[in-house]
Image (cartoon, rainbow, N blue to C red):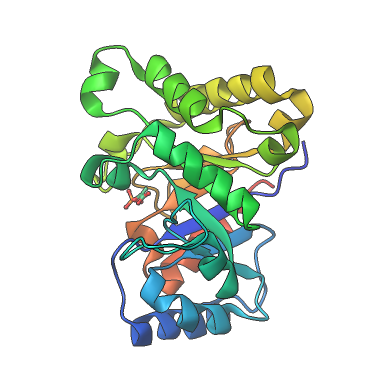
Length: 255
Ligand code: PEP
């Protein structure tokens, strides 16, 4: 398989510039001997210019939480792919459930953003996941496949190989109640199967699939022990440098 595990921090709308820079300095101290996994810090736009230099020279990369699909234009309040690349971003989260829920992002909009990320050299982390009522209604698979089709339509196999899909059941985000590892694995296998059917086995074998939703340093190892789970997208437990470092170490378990 040979996929490098990927732990991505999603800071959401937390941290001032000073707090973000302090995180970077602390993270470097925490990890004199870095874990053999990839780490990405998806920071708020306002802190990217501070976090980038703080991570420079470390094995950890900078990411953003959203982008606009156009490169530039009259889109007040938006941020484009070239602007993110200019700040050193290498990854960008696309289609997080909070954006779908509170900012009415649709699968079609998510697809435009995903394509813009590739155009501007950013590796997308595509978030998909069912809500609690959808799960209770037995619609998990249909929801996940619908979100995948909507976002990935028109992608090239070479782009699919660079994709990360974060399976994030909406009911598990910030709730303290994660999915079980076997349930997360079932979703990850469904996702990889869809990637294989759409883009070929090779691309599907290279794409990474994360689990997200109430991941903590003490439960991450059981998720990455699953054959199709290659890391995690983490909100709350990624906000402190010592906790993020512990997540990176936990993700390396058994690798
Ligand atoms: C997230 O924000 O994507 C997330 C998974 O949050 P938390 O880890 O806090 O559940």
